[in-house]
Length: 498
Image (cartoon, rainbow, N blue to C red):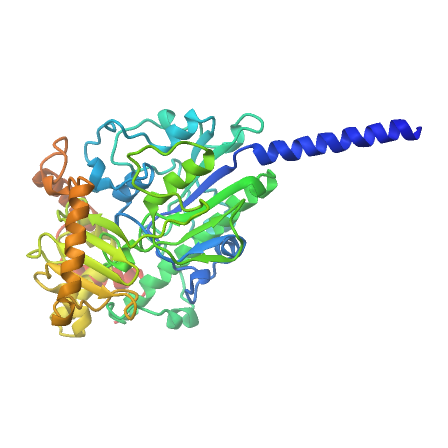
C-alpha cells in the first residue's frame, strides 16, 4: 500500500472518529431516574452507620451528593404528583394522599414524560431489576412499575414501554426505575446480627426498646436491598455502553416509614437522599444549598433542551448557576383516612411548621400505620406505663401546638420545638408571614380540603377501617385488637422475648 493511499485512509478514519465524537457531544444526554420508596438519607455516603451501600457510595463518588434535598410532601402520591410535574401538589389540587377518584390533569399542566416524548425522547417506566441474590436478601419482585399519581393516566399516554433498550438506534431516552424498598412491610430477617443491632443510632424521640431496634434493623437491611438494585441498574447502563452519556439521578419520594417520619412535616419525613451523576457533574462534589424534588423535572427539561413552562415552580439545579434560595415549602393534607392540613417552611437554619388543626393529636388515626408500624402500639403501651421520656411523650399528646420552630443549626434533625420561647417570637412571626404569602401566591388549594371528585371522608374512613380490621382478623382472629394484643403479635414476628 503506497503512502498516499495510507494517508487517505488515515484521514478518513480520523474524520469518521471526529464526526462520531461531535455527534455524541451534540446529542442530548440520556436521563435515568432511580426512585426509592420511603427512604431517608440512610446511606454510608451521607454518614449513616451500620449500613452497607457500596453502589450508592460509588454513585456519590462519581457524582454529586445533595445534603439539603427535601420532598414537597411526606407521603408517596402527593410527592410523586409534584415531582413529575415540577410544581407543588397544593397548587394543582393533587394534595390529598391517596386520591380515591383521580381525575385528568387540568390545563396547562403536562407531565414530564409527555414533554420528553414530544421532544423525541424514548420514555420508559419499569420496576427495578431483581437478581436471585437480591431476592435472597428479601428484595421484592413487582410486575408493574409504580406511578401513584393523584391524576388519572394510562401508561401508554406517558411511556413508550418498560425497557429503554427498545428505543431506536441512538435515540435519547428517559428511563425511570421504581424501587419498592424500603416501603413497608419490611422482610423480617430470620436472624439478627448482634453487632449491627447494637450499632443502630436511634433518634432520641424513639424509645430504645428491643422491638424498635429490630424494626430499624429490618429497615436498614431493606435499604441495602435498594443499594443492590441500584447496582444492577448501573450494570445495565454499563453493559449497553450508555453510562458516560447518561445523567443518573437517585432519590426517594419522601422520608423513612417510621411513626414520626412518613406523613409528617418533620426532617425525618421530608429530607431525602439525592445523588446525581453524569456529563458535566463534578465527581465527589457536594451541594449544601436547598433543593426540592420539584426541581428535578425542570432540571431534566433544561438538560433535554426543552423550554420550561411558566407554570413550573421548581428550578433547574444543573445549570451553570445553582438556584440559591432562602426557603422551600412542604405540605401535608389528608393521608388515606387521616384528615389533616399542615404546612412547613424550610430555610437554611430553620424548620417552621404550622398545624392548621392543633386540636388533633399526632396519633390521628391512620389505618395504614396502625396495621404496618409495630412502634405505634409500642409507644402507646410505654406511654401508659410512664416509660417514655419528655421528648418521646410530647409526640403522644392529645393535641399539638399551632406553630413549631426548630433551629437546625444546633438541632439538625428537628427534635426540640422552640416556638413557645419568648426570644423566638420574632422569628415565628417572620416565617408565619412567609408561609401565608406562599399560600396565597402559590394558590394553595388545601384550605378547600379534598377535590369535589373525592368521596366523603366518612366513606374513605369506613373503607380503610375495613382494611385494618381484615388485616388483624387474618393475623390474630380479632378485627379490633388492643394495643397490647397488637404489640404481642409484632414481638412474636420479630422474635422479641418478654
